[in-house]
Amino acid sequence: MQEIELKKTYNKVLTRFYNGCNYIEEHPEQDEKYYPKVLELKNIIDKILEKLPNATEEEILNGFKV
Picture 1 (cartoon, rainbow, N blue to C red):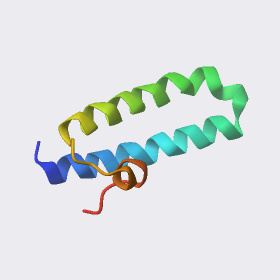
Picture 2 (cartoon, rainbow, N blue to C red; picture 1 turned 180 degrees about the vertical axis):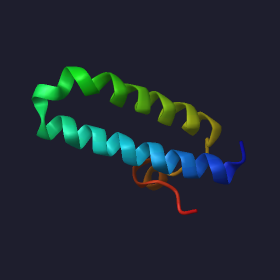
Picture 3 (tube, one colour; picture 1 turned 90 degrees about the vertical axis):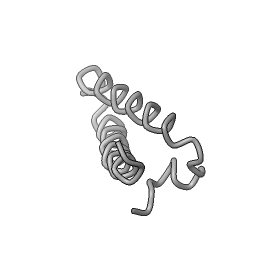
Picture 4 (cartoon, rainbow, N blue to C red; picture 1 turned 30 degrees about the horizontal axis):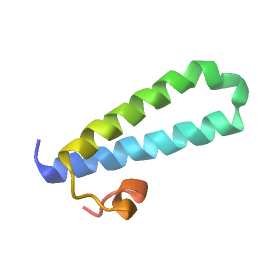
């Protein structure tokens, strides 16, 4: 996968991850149902970052400009 495509995928997964975290925070009763999916998204984020070793802290937290 090309670097640009990796960055686009990262941005999409990061958004879903943050949305999932926010949802769980706002609906703690749904924690058991959605927590595994949020962890899955975190694992995807980690795998993508392994392929983008020069990512800055800003990019890791807020996504890439593509």
